[in-house]
Length: 155
Image (cartoon, rainbow, N blue to C red; front, top):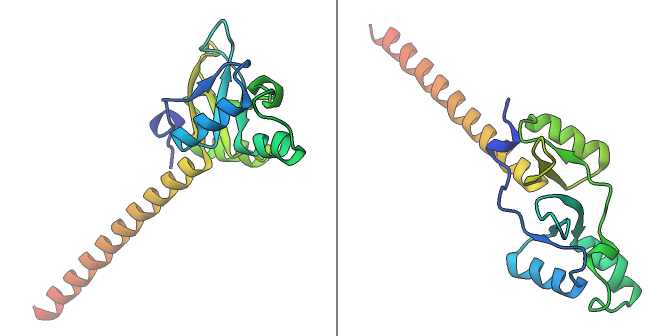
């Protein structure tokens, strides 16, 4: 399964700037049905500087009883981004996710510009399609062998 991230990762990424309120972050996640937003540099909107997840909102704000209108994406985002390249093999991405216990990888091009995001759900979708294709191929081979055996018996 030599599939590169650029072949299946999401290239349309929802982003916010560091000064976006946590309340707006939560509202955007709900609106777009996503669990994370990439935080980009306020001056260079192509440069990812962090990621804020639904888990960050819950653990950093809600569980502490803090007002999400007061805090910003920059206050609660993870800044130690583990980044991937579009040319990275999907299985290498899985190993990276496993090593750092991540559900998402931010994808950047060689210049460090945001190029996409890949989630564990994207990887599972890819694996599901690959396994379904394998099942079809194996079934076709079995059917062909059965037909050949029947033709030999009939002859």
